[in-house]
Length: 243
View (cartoon, rainbow, N blue to C red):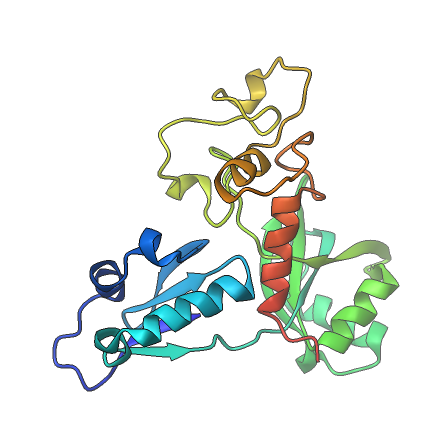
């Protein structure tokens, strides 16, 4: 959910300060997964479930001082994305868009190159945004032909993961934790030096301890089947439009 200061205030207080002064998160039983500053002095609030989100909104609206000073807005739904792998450096956006249009028998303006990810040996991965039916068509195709080569296509989930602490929602350069944690066993040492034979996911271990869930922890933190990662994927999908 997105929170903004109401426009009729001369000197609005920061949203985070208002929440901290008016709502006791522990006593009110408010469960927040993540927060991040956004434009126009706003604050984005992420919750793990719709139930947690509704509980937060109920507590916020019950406080007259907050209801009078904070505007609540739903984030605009975005188009889903797919990623096209291993395209040679020097290939233009227009070449990629034309190949997509040819494969789906539609116009190039239906697609947008959102950004590129650097691959290996002079290759890039193109992340494409498009209406849901076109993204689904591309995912069903699984491959696209470009410059006499076939390129794999998969749905793309824009989920940040920190390679220092293994947590989601930020990257290593923005990590606030002091210690480095291993992607393989979850202990406090660099992943490259791990000698443990038993995999243990740090994120699932912490979720079990802090949220009283019972996730399987016997996998790497980088495993795509990780319950915490799958939860992040679902939250990301909920922010998209598939209609």
